[in-house]
Image (cartoon, rainbow, N blue to C red; front, side, top):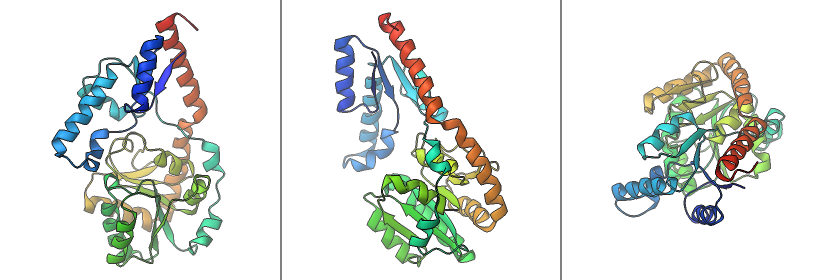
Length: 299
């Protein structure tokens, strides 16, 4: 009754073809700022970024509705010249898995005592995630707070480079990069931590932020798309511009103040309740029904 695609390439084009041939509404969720990943294409970057924008804009013209996973990305679609219906339907997660997570075993496996303040990032180890920036800020914080530790969970092309960077910064014993871990264990890794960190400026609505908040972790992040419309500074996390000194300052504040972390973390857990899969599913099904009724007269 509805064809829903999640990227414009390959299967996205297949979905668009069948939507057109079957006379069905086409829905596309705009998950990724593709132009921010242009560095993976070894061609002139201005050309690649323009091509990415033009391709998304052309794909959007085939759609009956585009779903924005975050309010702040809506303006980017306007810049692309998108004229079809756009609905903001924010990403959601299975809250239960994170509410009930226990990090005791993970801390023991990582040999982290109760006195260590553990900062966690989960996600792709890629240049677009701005992780060199995070390591450099963490080094400055660690000089003042040797009890701090940083855990970067995930795989990607920068993994070995980041491990070397940690060694070069004298942080080999304090920055942990275990690589990919089973997805079923991710909630336990969050639960082992004291705060969630993110310095990426290329997100749309990062699930990792929601997962960390659902586990009761305060978010310490660069204010960008996806964090700025999820985190309320001083309430459930701390945000700043993408500036090394500014980020070091808020990270140091969070690491040094256990009472602040507890207060922000409790509020973060409450914020995460707004992003349940149940709420998301009901809204999505209602949208499908509406589009189906308008497009075909069914439902």
